[in-house]
Length: 99
Image 1 (cartoon, rainbow, N blue to C red):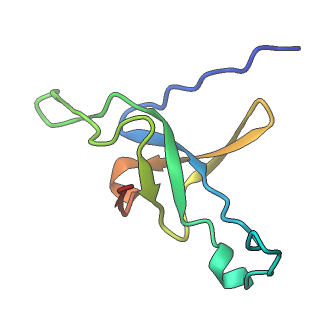
Image 2 (tube, rainbow, N blue to C red):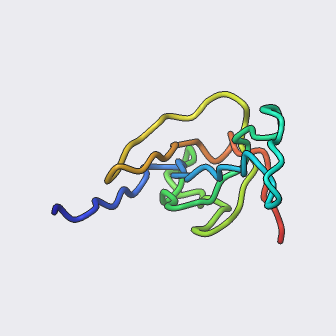
């Protein structure tokens, strides 16, 4: 069995694992398809940041483990060790979700 690869995003990109909401409640009631949209995710890896005109690194404001609100469209799908992730630029992320 091959070891899982670790991806470190380049520049200001963020690797996100989408959170799949439940399709039914704990009592077994099926939820409508609209309520099961994948619009949030957990940050798995963060790039070092983009560079400004002077060559200074502008760090990414997110960190690993953050829960984020994702846009409806966009991102690049990436498969690592049979798991599906998505790459976004930091400015594509709509916000951070608080517990």
